[in-house]
Amino acid sequence: MTSPTALIEALPLGTWLYWSLLLAITTASLVFAALAASKRLFAWVAAGLLVLAIVFASLGSSHPPFGVTALLALLCIALAIVGGSPAVIVTLGLAGGENPAGRHGGILVRASGVDTAAIDTAAIETAAKREVLRGGSTIGILERLAVAAAIVAGHPEAIALIVALKGVGRFTELDAAEARERFIIGSLVSLVWGCASAAVFVIALN
Image (tube, rainbow, N blue to C red):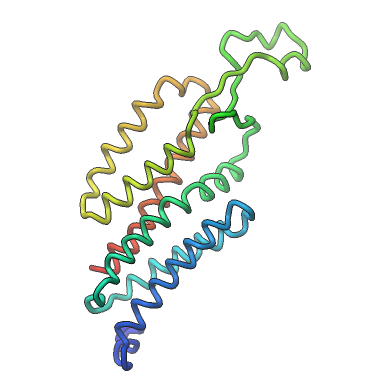
């Protein structure tokens, strides 16, 4: 049975058509990921388009035309960087949690040593709090940039070093249950998105 890719490539300029469609799907996912900051629904659309790009890339094709490889690599890395943040936000929203955001990109948790049994409810709400996981958004961007670049460059083993470095750097902040939960969920979603974005490039060229 003839594959969809073979049918496309049988047409005049079929190779260009295949790679143009893949670039278009990846670009569309990137655009919706960028728009997801204003509307959560766009994050789901971006995720759906990313899955579609992976499926389309898995169909296989002949060697890409000149310049397409570099363009696809840049698009995949950009998608990893831009799309990870809304994906993490949506997932954390589904997971629940009532910790307010801090002024430096982290979350506020109740400071240790506050005896909630000895004070009333109103006092608990105003009890001393500390911000943990500061700079989470910036770290996430750098994490996905490093992960996607490592995969595109053909060195996925570098992901282990990236994960270890992040874990060591955050270790002292994970004493609060809320911080541990947010760290684990956020890290996993960020890594999955970064790897999936880079996978479009790797699958398409193999």
